[in-house]
Image (cartoon, rainbow, N blue to C red; front, side, top):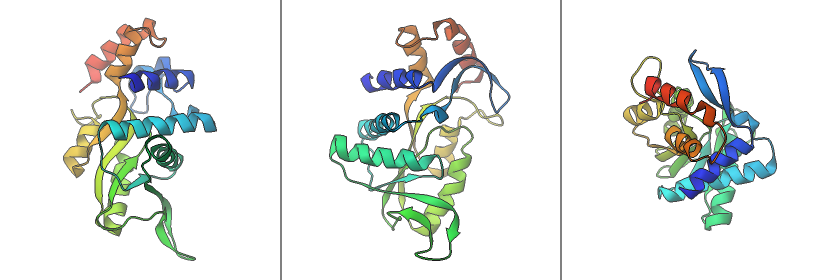
Length: 217
């Protein structure tokens, strides 16, 4: 759990994990918010990449290449690839997609170490709310080459029901695509860190538990 607690403290330090009264895109009123847009510096990105690498190694996920969906996933997959090399001596390729296929120069849909049949690919994302990003990139990946998507890494699993389902986006990803989604931490880890006074937010603890009870899976 050590790297998980370190990551929760890191999110709080960066202003990514915040507490208060927030209206989410879903319309739900939540006592906490994860704002990944607050990762803004090279040092923060370096540390973030190490947490992704730690998660990949903890779960022993087979990987040849990391894929970062444009645009948010691009710096994330680069930082994770660097961290795998520097921290674990594991050198993997990385690539990302273009929003539109390039019809000049080298052309193609992907930039970087483009996928080939049989590649073990891990998708690197920040958060997963509705699963929309996966629905967009899955046909791109499988339509280009018969890759083996061995997992997807996100920072936080809110473990929250979708608006139209009793399943979370993480559960739906496995049911629909057979892709296991691993998170660096989940909401239960965050609640435990607050209980243990690892981070601030104790005054919101009961509200978080109530929200979890109401919308959690």
